[in-house]
Image (cartoon, rainbow, N blue to C red):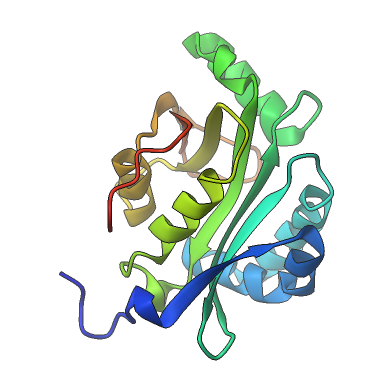
Length: 191
């Protein structure tokens, strides 16, 4: 059951954005990132530097949840993960220890998936994830998420993601993260 103050997913739609469209809305996306992750505001400015680089990587794909009046309320993007990329190389070392490094072959790295807190719980994240994953030519999708019982973690579990590494510490963030993977197509149930 949805709380009365959470907008219905019916008031939004998901759009496919090119890298140019994503970059044109980068400030709004980083505001959502900061609010959803509860990071200090300066973190969005720092993350925007990486996001600009990501938009130019091979296999970049983005979906945006937009309200009827054009407000961005959620987004997800990623790209083909390859050796030499920061996340890929860190995660490969973690997965070698876990015996799961084969997951990195022909995989899409879901770099970001965020929904404004006031819109969370309405199915927007599930819809963005499903539409993004449904468009991919890859055999797997990988991601990292804070290693705690959050809505996002439950969404990933519900759509078929499994543990690849737990309690992983990325440089620059003191919180433990879980590295998760799912074979494509995703297991997507109505939210």
